[in-house]
Length: 239
Image (tube, rainbow, N blue to C red; front, side, top):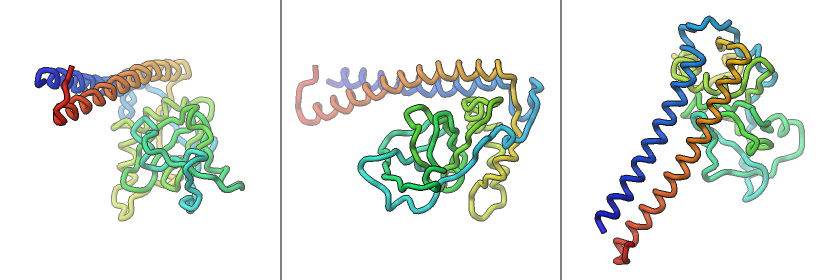
């Protein structure tokens, strides 16, 4: 019994370590291809981010009254993780009709960024599965123009020496944490040529797919371990 539990626990831990390594690889690959955002060793032209944003907005207040068991996905700040949008315990709304609601509707390849609350600066690209969702007042929608890839912008924003450093400087000395849209538009960002951005996106997509498979494997091993522990404590046989 103990040997089986030890083996199941070892598999679980190794898969968790593999996920962490994949995340580290994502960051390393970005820095290798993009270069250090601070020193800009590749000499990319540096532009204000707003020049490459066709649409920037944040969510509205008052969505609580529209919550429902079914409807359109509602993306809150807690759903926006570093480089991923969590679908765990997803919230839904029956959105009101009108321009104000439509203003906050998400499109595929929008970059979502948390701008208020306790976790400012988390960013993720909206996938096809998140298109049509709405965002809370704590989340900004950044819709990129041709010339800047949404994946590249996301990778820049979540990088410690890129967007995270800019966000930290913007917050310095503020009594109430928050990031306004004017600050976002002013962020200086190196802009690699299009073919480099396409390579960055392609590599990131392949690594993300591998990471998703690792996470599925980890969840399966986690479920197996919990099941074995429950059976062991209930006196059931473990085979």
